[in-house]
Image (cartoon, rainbow, N blue to C red):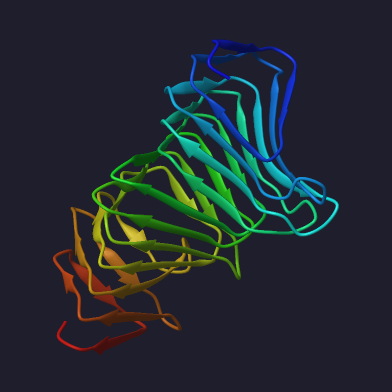
Length: 239
């Protein structure tokens, strides 16, 4: 579609869909990227930066199918929702920058590959399933609420991660590989999440605390923060 598209109702995309014109949404609108057993993978590419004021869903019906969001950066506005849903199973991909001011819910494993794009969270971002992020110059920063639920993993490869404050909790795991990590405020493992750090540099003003009964594993990494160890620190490689 090369026209401008103003969505106040429901837009369902199946197969490969490209939107070249300006896209606007209204409060209460729904954009559903829906893989299905008839058409197969659903991929939506939006080629101009856009703002979601309603709900954007990645899902599937019928059988196991992929749902993918590509293109220019999306702002998820205050009161809006981006939901990665299990549907009937399948791969979920988001290869674009996301500026979240509203709510992001990851209920099906998803891979982010925004390249040099930036992902920011000043709203609420919850992992009910695993989330993998791979950057080539971009990064993920959060000053809102970031929940990594127990048994779930947020993995970040390359790029940067910047925790600027807000709520960082859930009891899950955050894994860094080749990442520039910044804790601008104090971090206490397990009260927030468990860290696994490999081939990364960790800095910032925040004090990192490893309580009794907790283990922090550092592999071939550099930590410039103050480190308070009451539990176990395991170092591997040159740390």
